[in-house]
Length: 220
Image (cartoon, rainbow, N blue to C red; front, top):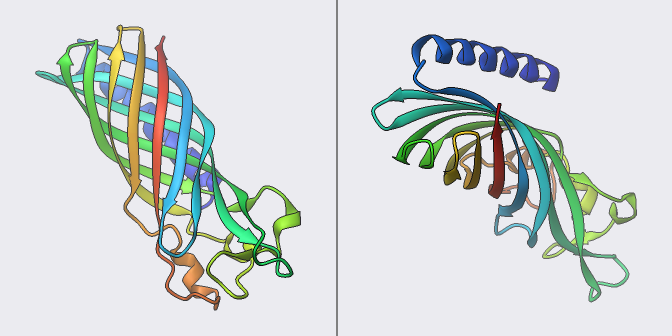
């Protein structure tokens, strides 16, 4: 799935969803702009990782569904970072964390249970994530050997799986026109699975993404 095709489909779904929300849930329906900070890591026993921080932004819409439930549709753009421990081949005892960046686009379809309507809610649901490669921030680390391996180089693990599914849960609070939120995403698919086709030193990579998101939404 190409990024252009994914963006086209995403925007189409977003527009149709917004239209349906306006038609069916006239009680409350708002379009919003969201932004925030992410704390990203990969849960794996195959690499020694360190959580990275980055920014996100996107668009969202919230509409009344029934009783105490809202529906939330959104598209988000992420530039997450993670660090992986490695060392130069000639100095195996001088280890350092090597920084990688992943660019991704997400579409979410969430349910929201209103504890206090328009002011406090629990949010949960699935997320489709399409991401780039695990890109090294600097070419100078390409030939570094990753911690726990004899000859696996930092550049050899960049071609990760590009389509992944996440589940999300969290809470948001605020006013009708502004909210702050804390959410957690867990990648249910193995984002390192594509590496197992590369004939690398390890042929059984397993890794799931974890992301904490601190966000703010302004509803227009």
